[in-house]
Image 1 (tube, rainbow, N blue to C red):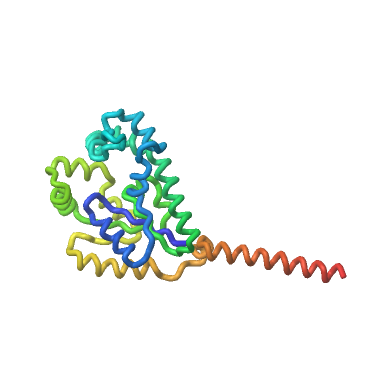
Image 2 (image 1 turned 180 degrees about the vertical axis):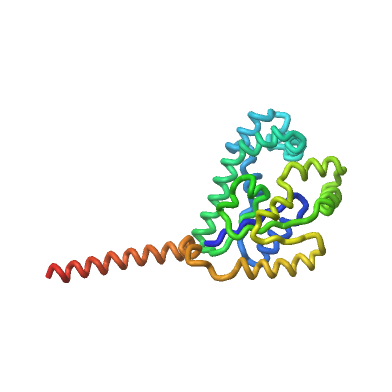
Amino acid sequence: MRIVGLTGGIASGKSTVSNLFKAQGIPVVDADVVARDALKKGTGGWKKVVEAFGDDILQPDGEVDRPALGRIVFSNPDKRQLLNRLLAPFISSGILQEILKLWLKGHKVIVLDVPLLFEAKMDKWTKPIITVWVDRETQLKRLVSRDGINDEEANNKINAQMSLDSKRSKADIVIDNTGSLDELKVQFQNVLHVVTRPLTWSEFMLSRQGAFSAFAFVVLGVLVAKNLFKCDAS
């Protein structure tokens, strides 16, 4: 099984690339979706976060007010780190469960879409690693336009993450998204060719088919050995 790492920064276009993978029939495990599930009312993550941040972050229906929580953590590095520590176990276990579901369905290639891929040390699970990159000026302009916020708020959100230049230096594949959507799609086709190439032997052995093949070989080996033993005994 090939687990492809996909990361980027806020307003870099990572979600667009993620959707392009989905359009090609490649399943995507989205860490943001898993994180939202981890914060649903009554879950273990919800209880930990409410205990740490108080009832002020809750909506009238008891669900977490995510924009309010975001404003708190984006402006305070210590509280951001606290939130990440509280949710990390729930997010990691949720991602593993999604990967297992796809493994059981027999998927040979999946994409792991994680904004904090390097920060959460999940890069060691994935190969190749794709970073969707834009320059800082483009990132700032897109974020201000997308979220309707001022430059200071946008810079706080950008600074809350590892820089895209750092992520680019750690990646196996870099998608430069400073251009148009059509230019992005051209780059994506090249990336798709790499991602969907035949599995290596080690990747195949990690797939469901590989595991079943290994099991079949073991059973066959036992049966052959058993028959040989019977022949020798007679």
